[in-house]
Length: 257
Image (cartoon, rainbow, N blue to C red; front, side, top):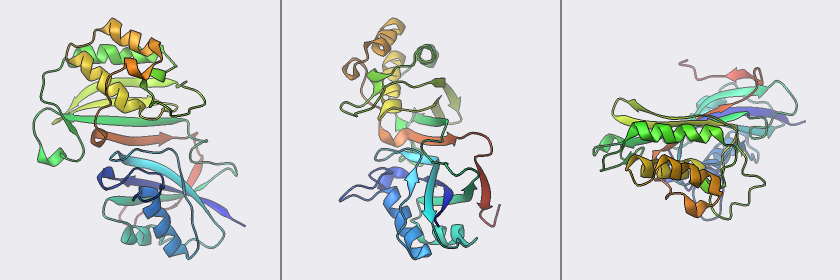
Protein backbone atom coordinates (compact mmCIF):
# COMPACT_ATOMS: atom_id res chain seq x y z
CA UNK A 1 0.00 0.00 0.00
CA UNK A 2 1.32 3.43 -0.92
CA UNK A 3 2.45 5.70 1.88
CA UNK A 4 2.54 9.48 1.46
CA UNK A 5 5.74 11.43 2.13
CA UNK A 6 6.39 15.15 2.19
CA UNK A 7 9.50 17.02 1.08
CA UNK A 8 10.56 20.57 1.87
CA UNK A 9 12.67 21.73 -1.07
CA UNK A 10 14.27 24.98 -2.21
CA UNK A 11 15.70 26.06 -5.53
CA UNK A 12 17.18 28.84 -7.57
CA UNK A 13 14.97 29.10 -10.63
CA UNK A 14 17.23 30.79 -13.17
CA UNK A 15 17.97 27.57 -15.07
CA UNK A 16 14.41 26.23 -15.13
CA UNK A 17 11.19 26.79 -17.04
CA UNK A 18 9.35 26.85 -13.72
CA UNK A 19 8.34 24.15 -11.23
CA UNK A 20 5.84 22.13 -13.25
CA UNK A 21 6.81 19.43 -15.74
CA UNK A 22 6.28 20.50 -19.34
CA UNK A 23 7.36 19.12 -22.71
CA UNK A 24 10.70 20.14 -24.20
CA UNK A 25 11.79 22.18 -21.16
CA UNK A 26 13.83 21.55 -18.03
CA UNK A 27 11.82 22.04 -14.84
CA UNK A 28 12.38 21.63 -11.12
CA UNK A 29 9.69 18.96 -10.85
CA UNK A 30 11.31 16.93 -13.65
CA UNK A 31 14.68 17.01 -11.85
CA UNK A 32 13.12 16.05 -8.51
CA UNK A 33 11.02 13.20 -9.93
CA UNK A 34 14.02 11.80 -11.80
CA UNK A 35 16.14 11.84 -8.64
CA UNK A 36 13.40 10.24 -6.51
CA UNK A 37 12.76 7.59 -9.16
CA UNK A 38 16.45 6.72 -9.32
CA UNK A 39 16.85 6.40 -5.56
CA UNK A 40 13.59 4.52 -4.93
CA UNK A 41 13.89 2.40 -8.09
CA UNK A 42 10.32 3.05 -9.19
CA UNK A 43 8.45 5.73 -11.10
CA UNK A 44 7.75 8.64 -8.72
CA UNK A 45 5.50 11.57 -9.55
CA UNK A 46 5.55 14.46 -7.07
CA UNK A 47 2.87 17.09 -6.42
CA UNK A 48 3.79 20.61 -5.33
CA UNK A 49 1.92 23.11 -3.18
CA UNK A 50 1.85 25.43 -6.19
CA UNK A 51 3.78 26.24 -9.30
CA UNK A 52 6.37 28.89 -9.93
CA UNK A 53 7.00 30.45 -13.33
CA UNK A 54 10.24 30.34 -15.29
CA UNK A 55 13.04 32.11 -13.43
CA UNK A 56 11.17 32.30 -10.10
CA UNK A 57 12.87 30.88 -7.00
CA UNK A 58 11.70 29.06 -3.86
CA UNK A 59 13.11 29.14 -0.36
CA UNK A 60 10.43 26.64 0.58
CA UNK A 61 8.15 24.55 -1.60
CA UNK A 62 6.28 21.68 0.00
CA UNK A 63 5.95 18.60 -2.21
CA UNK A 64 4.31 15.24 -1.60
CA UNK A 65 4.82 11.87 -3.28
CA UNK A 66 3.53 8.34 -2.72
CA UNK A 67 5.64 5.21 -2.40
CA UNK A 68 4.78 1.64 -1.42
CA UNK A 69 8.25 0.49 -0.45
CA UNK A 70 10.56 1.35 2.41
CA UNK A 71 12.02 4.85 2.52
CA UNK A 72 15.61 4.98 3.76
CA UNK A 73 16.45 7.64 6.32
CA UNK A 74 19.38 8.49 4.06
CA UNK A 75 17.00 9.64 1.30
CA UNK A 76 17.78 13.33 1.81
CA UNK A 77 21.50 12.68 1.58
CA UNK A 78 20.99 10.70 -1.60
CA UNK A 79 18.70 13.32 -3.13
CA UNK A 80 21.13 16.14 -2.49
CA UNK A 81 23.87 14.06 -4.06
CA UNK A 82 21.87 13.59 -7.27
CA UNK A 83 19.95 16.85 -7.60
CA UNK A 84 21.59 19.75 -9.46
CA UNK A 85 23.46 22.34 -7.38
CA UNK A 86 20.53 24.77 -7.59
CA UNK A 87 17.92 22.43 -6.05
CA UNK A 88 18.07 21.27 -2.41
CA UNK A 89 16.02 18.80 -0.38
CA UNK A 90 15.80 20.27 3.14
CA UNK A 91 13.58 17.91 5.12
CA UNK A 92 11.43 14.80 4.77
CA UNK A 93 8.13 14.40 6.64
CA UNK A 94 5.19 12.05 6.98
CA UNK A 95 1.61 13.39 7.14
CA UNK A 96 -0.39 12.93 10.34
CA UNK A 97 -3.67 12.60 8.42
CA UNK A 98 -4.61 10.32 5.54
CA UNK A 99 -5.98 13.17 3.40
CA UNK A 100 -2.91 15.42 3.39
CA UNK A 101 -2.29 17.11 0.04
CA UNK A 102 0.57 19.55 -0.49
CA UNK A 103 -1.64 21.93 -2.47
CA UNK A 104 -5.14 21.54 -1.08
CA UNK A 105 -4.21 21.25 2.61
CA UNK A 106 -2.10 24.42 2.48
CA UNK A 107 -3.60 27.43 4.25
CA UNK A 108 -1.21 30.15 3.07
CA UNK A 109 1.63 31.05 0.74
CA UNK A 110 4.21 33.78 1.30
CA UNK A 111 6.35 35.52 -1.31
CA UNK A 112 9.14 38.07 -1.26
CA UNK A 113 10.09 40.21 -4.24
CA UNK A 114 13.64 41.58 -4.17
CA UNK A 115 14.81 44.85 -5.73
CA UNK A 116 18.27 46.40 -5.85
CA UNK A 117 18.76 50.09 -6.55
CA UNK A 118 22.33 49.88 -7.74
CA UNK A 119 24.05 47.40 -10.02
CA UNK A 120 24.96 44.27 -8.06
CA UNK A 121 26.64 41.16 -9.49
CA UNK A 122 25.75 39.41 -6.21
CA UNK A 123 22.04 39.77 -6.90
CA UNK A 124 22.21 39.52 -10.69
CA UNK A 125 20.05 36.36 -10.80
CA UNK A 126 17.88 37.01 -7.73
CA UNK A 127 16.80 40.65 -7.71
CA UNK A 128 15.33 43.22 -10.08
CA UNK A 129 17.62 46.22 -10.63
CA UNK A 130 15.81 49.54 -10.93
CA UNK A 131 17.56 52.72 -12.08
CA UNK A 132 14.99 55.30 -11.05
CA UNK A 133 13.91 56.97 -7.83
CA UNK A 134 10.85 55.55 -6.07
CA UNK A 135 8.71 56.64 -3.14
CA UNK A 136 8.64 53.58 -0.86
CA UNK A 137 6.22 55.18 1.61
CA UNK A 138 3.69 55.75 -1.14
CA UNK A 139 4.14 52.19 -2.38
CA UNK A 140 3.38 50.98 1.15
CA UNK A 141 0.23 53.09 1.22
CA UNK A 142 -0.84 51.48 -2.04
CA UNK A 143 0.08 47.98 -0.84
CA UNK A 144 -2.12 48.47 2.23
CA UNK A 145 -5.12 48.96 -0.07
CA UNK A 146 -4.79 45.34 -1.21
CA UNK A 147 -5.93 44.15 2.21
CA UNK A 148 -9.31 45.85 1.69
CA UNK A 149 -10.15 43.52 -1.21
CA UNK A 150 -10.54 39.82 -1.89
CA UNK A 151 -10.88 39.75 -5.70
CA UNK A 152 -7.76 40.27 -7.80
CA UNK A 153 -8.61 39.70 -11.43
CA UNK A 154 -6.59 42.77 -12.44
CA UNK A 155 -3.41 41.00 -11.36
CA UNK A 156 -4.01 37.62 -12.97
CA UNK A 157 -2.45 36.43 -16.23
CA UNK A 158 -4.89 36.59 -19.12
CA UNK A 159 -6.59 33.29 -20.01
CA UNK A 160 -5.37 31.66 -16.78
CA UNK A 161 -8.69 29.79 -16.51
CA UNK A 162 -9.07 30.22 -12.73
CA UNK A 163 -12.26 28.96 -11.12
CA UNK A 164 -12.24 32.13 -9.01
CA UNK A 165 -10.13 35.28 -8.58
CA UNK A 166 -10.83 35.38 -4.83
CA UNK A 167 -7.84 35.48 -2.48
CA UNK A 168 -7.68 36.26 1.24
CA UNK A 169 -4.80 38.69 1.75
CA UNK A 170 -2.95 38.56 5.09
CA UNK A 171 -0.21 41.15 4.56
CA UNK A 172 1.46 43.20 1.84
CA UNK A 173 4.28 45.65 2.58
CA UNK A 174 7.70 46.93 1.52
CA UNK A 175 10.79 47.05 3.73
CA UNK A 176 14.46 47.86 3.40
CA UNK A 177 16.71 44.87 4.10
CA UNK A 178 20.45 45.57 3.86
CA UNK A 179 21.15 46.07 0.13
CA UNK A 180 17.62 45.07 -0.88
CA UNK A 181 14.20 46.61 -1.08
CA UNK A 182 11.81 43.71 -0.40
CA UNK A 183 8.08 43.38 -0.99
CA UNK A 184 6.45 40.87 1.38
CA UNK A 185 3.06 39.42 0.58
CA UNK A 186 1.03 36.58 2.11
CA UNK A 187 -2.37 35.17 1.19
CA UNK A 188 -4.30 31.93 1.33
CA UNK A 189 -3.75 31.52 -2.43
CA UNK A 190 -2.37 33.44 -5.42
CA UNK A 191 -3.44 33.70 -9.04
CA UNK A 192 -1.03 33.04 -11.88
CA UNK A 193 1.40 35.93 -12.25
CA UNK A 194 -0.32 37.81 -9.43
CA UNK A 195 2.67 38.87 -7.32
CA UNK A 196 4.74 40.09 -10.27
CA UNK A 197 1.74 42.06 -11.62
CA UNK A 198 1.19 43.67 -8.22
CA UNK A 199 4.88 44.59 -7.90
CA UNK A 200 4.97 46.06 -11.41
CA UNK A 201 1.90 48.18 -10.66
CA UNK A 202 3.22 49.30 -7.26
CA UNK A 203 6.42 50.46 -8.96
CA UNK A 204 4.29 52.77 -11.11
CA UNK A 205 2.95 54.24 -7.86
CA UNK A 206 6.49 54.58 -6.54
CA UNK A 207 7.58 56.45 -9.68
CA UNK A 208 4.66 58.87 -9.41
CA UNK A 209 3.05 57.52 -12.58
CA UNK A 210 -0.02 56.23 -10.73
CA UNK A 211 -1.87 57.80 -7.80
CA UNK A 212 -3.32 55.90 -4.85
CA UNK A 213 -6.83 56.46 -6.15
CA UNK A 214 -5.76 55.14 -9.55
CA UNK A 215 -4.22 52.08 -7.89
CA UNK A 216 -7.51 51.44 -6.10
CA UNK A 217 -9.30 51.79 -9.44
CA UNK A 218 -6.96 49.17 -10.92
CA UNK A 219 -7.94 46.68 -8.19
CA UNK A 220 -11.63 47.37 -8.69
CA UNK A 221 -11.44 47.14 -12.50
CA UNK A 222 -10.92 43.35 -12.42
CA UNK A 223 -9.12 43.73 -15.74
CA UNK A 224 -5.47 42.76 -16.30
CA UNK A 225 -5.07 45.52 -18.90
CA UNK A 226 -5.75 48.12 -16.19
CA UNK A 227 -2.67 47.10 -14.16
CA UNK A 228 1.00 47.72 -14.87
CA UNK A 229 3.50 45.36 -16.53
CA UNK A 230 4.70 42.33 -14.61
CA UNK A 231 7.98 42.75 -12.76
CA UNK A 232 10.90 40.52 -13.78
CA UNK A 233 10.64 36.90 -12.67
CA UNK A 234 14.13 36.72 -11.19
CA UNK A 235 13.28 38.93 -8.20
CA UNK A 236 10.50 36.66 -6.92
CA UNK A 237 10.84 34.02 -4.18
CA UNK A 238 8.24 31.67 -2.76
CA UNK A 239 9.34 31.78 0.87
CA UNK A 240 6.88 29.72 2.90
CA UNK A 241 3.86 27.45 2.55
CA UNK A 242 1.63 27.29 5.62
CA UNK A 243 -0.40 24.31 6.90
CA UNK A 244 -2.63 23.56 9.88
CA UNK A 245 -0.65 22.77 13.01
CA UNK A 246 0.69 19.23 13.31
CA UNK A 247 -0.14 18.35 9.69
CA UNK A 248 3.05 16.29 9.43
CA UNK A 249 5.87 14.89 11.52
CA UNK A 250 9.61 14.77 10.82
CA UNK A 251 10.89 11.65 9.07
CA UNK A 252 14.46 12.85 8.54
CA UNK A 253 16.56 16.01 8.43
CA UNK A 254 20.03 16.64 6.99
CA UNK A 255 22.73 15.23 9.28
CA UNK A 256 24.26 18.64 9.96
CA UNK A 257 21.08 20.02 11.57
